[in-house]
Amino acid sequence: MIEFNHKEIEFLKTLEEARIATSHNDIPHVKPVSFVFYKKCIIIATDYDTRAFRNIKKNTNASIVIDIYKSGQHKAVCIQGQTEIIEHGGEFQELYDIFFKKFEWVRRDPWKEKEAPFLKIIPKNKTSWGLN
Image (cartoon, rainbow, N blue to C red; front, side):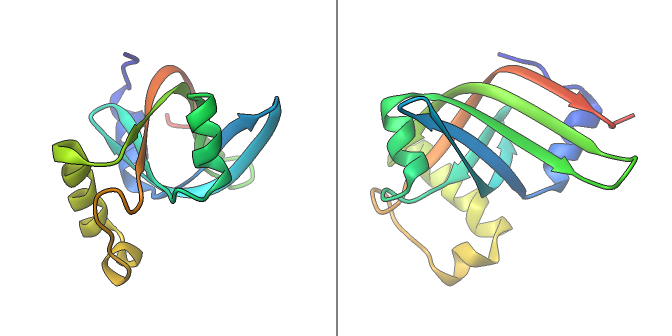
């Protein structure tokens, strides 16, 4: 697994929006998502009826970019990896509890196992810049 340095970890823990890229029939699909950085992985909540979920079911490769754009001071971490789908069990509950605590939208519209999954991106490559 890829190691993250201290500055990358701190950066990833302070943000909550990213863009995930998946692919269907060699056509890229990019969308904004809420995420958490947890145990060296990127965790995303999704729904079963999304293009991203359908893409991951067929092709587990994904990329995600977490960044802050400010002219001349752009900061980013870009990650490529394999994605696991977490739908139930102890890991699902652990991730759900983290999302429930962090995001108001989860508290407003809670869900249970097998109602909506998490996508767990396990980094295989990463690059970052502007985090000096």
